Length: 168
Image 1 (tube, rainbow, N blue to C red):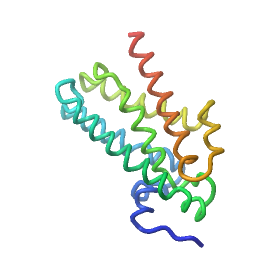
Image 2 (cartoon, rainbow, N blue to C red):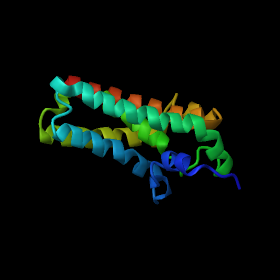
Image 3 (cartoon, rainbow, N blue to C red):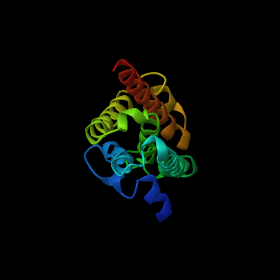
Image 4 (cartoon, helix red, strand yellow):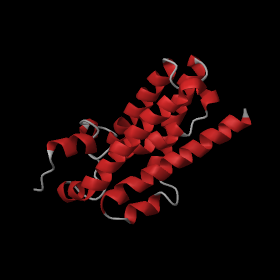
């Protein structure tokens, strides 16, 4: 059996959440949403300090995306193609959605709360359904194949949030 270094496994599984059942991808999507909610709740998602919110989420996005790209091939050799244990892709993809949320949707606690729930549910729906071109990305081998469908699902969810925001 192929082995993966402990640090790599911690990142690939988003600190073990990828081993949680059922729906490991759902577990892997939760940390950035909770983190973004807390940042919004303490006022870091407001326009005056929005750069800190962006910086924090971009950092999470880069770390977990890099984990997929660097160790994705090793993870597939150990577990299988696009393994359920690897949820770093969900963590990174959820960040894409969270980075696209208009600051106006995070102005008060109630709006922030429902926006975060909506961002989470939309991302999970697009990640599970994998509409084109997201589904096609899974044909790519290794870390990029694990990751790209989640980036696209995150982007699609973000577009829906912008449409909802524009409608109200």
